[in-house]
Amino acid sequence: MDFFIRWFFIFTPFLAFGSLVVVSPNPYVTLYTPRSVLLDPPSKEYIRFAGKNPRYSTCSGVCWAYDDQYIFAVNMQACSMGVYKFDSERKELTHVRNFENQHGVDLDRPENLACSKDGVFLAVPNMKSGKMHLYRMNQETFINPYPEMTIYDRSLHGVRFSHNNSYLASVSTGQSGISIYDIRNSPPIFLQSLGTPFYPLKAKTVDFSLDGRFMIAGYCIELSGKKHDAHGMIVVYECNKETGYINPSSVSITKEVDSVETIAFYPDGESFFSVDQVNSKIMGHSFDVVTGKIGNSWVALEGKESGLNIPHGIAFSSDGKYMAISNLKDDKITVYKTIEVDP
Image (cartoon, rainbow, N blue to C red):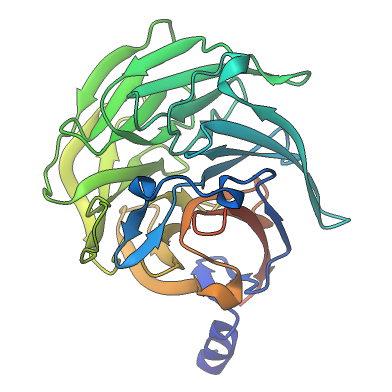
């Protein structure tokens, strides 16, 4: 068995307790953002450094929608949101719709996005304006471009819905850090903020465990217009799925990361991935669903040879067969195929 696992590590596996899941290092399909801002680069004042690597803020976040038939992606520099049709049989990703501010979406350097588990809302955090917009989704036009609800904070970076669709976690790189809202009614009701317990590391991202008992959060040094060292950590908190309350005492911590921009659980809930844009790699982490403890961490994908170029967003299809990554350096979406193998 040890030889079997070592052999599969060449192909970037992670152990999800019941099965071995292999992420292909070869992109399944790649699509560059149509009419990319990189074709006519903005002023250099917009350049940010991922560690010591300069980049513009382009395709920043991805999520799957409508039974994994579509991928939504936000673009920071363009202040836009694209909708892409995914055809797994033809290995095609096709741009079918673009939402810009003249359509009413009110985007101002959107960092990421997430769909509620019931497919009712799409949430988009805007870094510059500090507005977290919630749009109602529909099959005909994908979303109503005019936000139905808005949450206000500063320097918004990440967002996740609870699995019971009752609560939303808003992530700010400002003083509030991670904030929890009850979204069962409009307007949303503020419940709690965790602040900045690991300053100078800033909160960047969260995701909820499948049973709703735990919340995983990623912290790292905030990017700037200058070269900087990279430090990060991932923290597990216990949460009450009925009340939305997060216990601020950590259950588990790992510091085996340099940068954590986005976190996403694999659909079975027994492993999760984090995005390290500083080193252009995707890290895998095992997760104990009973105790909430983080287990082993490993490099799942790394470098341009795997199609990564300062990645930022990550999302799994609901069946776990595909993983979508947004890349900032070259303004593209890359989809990878995963394979489950019985150990």
